[in-house]
Image 1: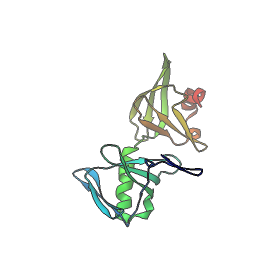
Image 2: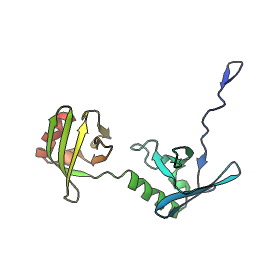
Image 3: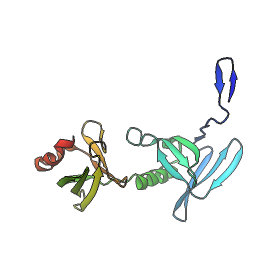
Image 4: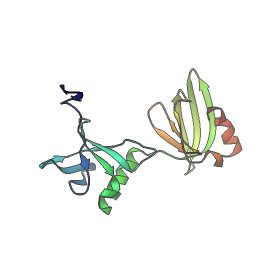
Length: 178
């Protein structure tokens, strides 16, 4: 670390490289998202990359961290709209796959035992869903006025897109947690 007058410069500071349609090309190869990128005049190829939303609920298509297999950050996509239509579709598909969260339309039961809550619900396709939450109050995220995200013990996410559209019976089962 260097000091110069009142300025502190950390030589190991992280540098964020902006990835866009001018310096990056994403493609699917062997079922994995891969990347060819040019950063500071150097060409690199990554056989597998992972996308991570910095603000998953507020800005789902902005500030996407692109990381390599060793979890090192390659760069940041400021907006996926900065890419051509085919790449935008590919990035959206990959983000939807990673951040898949079934939408719950009915709460069948919620039971608590020893700090855990055990949920039984139905999704939009009528399929039964069962999951377990620890610290239930902490793992219910309010998105906007009427939407909530439930995060189970394994990190899976479930969405209730409109709490007010739940039946009265379903609402009563979760009202305590809201």
